[in-house]
Image (cartoon, rainbow, N blue to C red; front, side, top):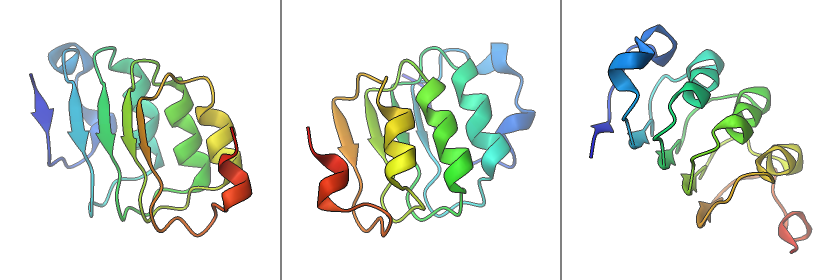
Length: 110
């Protein structure tokens, strides 16, 4: 199992060297939209935490392309109903949306 907790800029990493990366924690980091977009190139990525990051709603929509994700924590991010629609094609087993001001009860109806 490979985990990444710190980074300078994910979009600058050499993907072949990190292809087996399974778990990324970007909480309280300076991650930006381009860092999120590159995650779709990591086929083994199963768990992602993006807590208290200032990723835009547009950047969060890139997560819908990270097909291997099973666990996603977006607590205290700019997640909205539009973000959830983009995530709809993922087969998530665990999704945390604590303190996301753009999410309401009606947003997460089955």
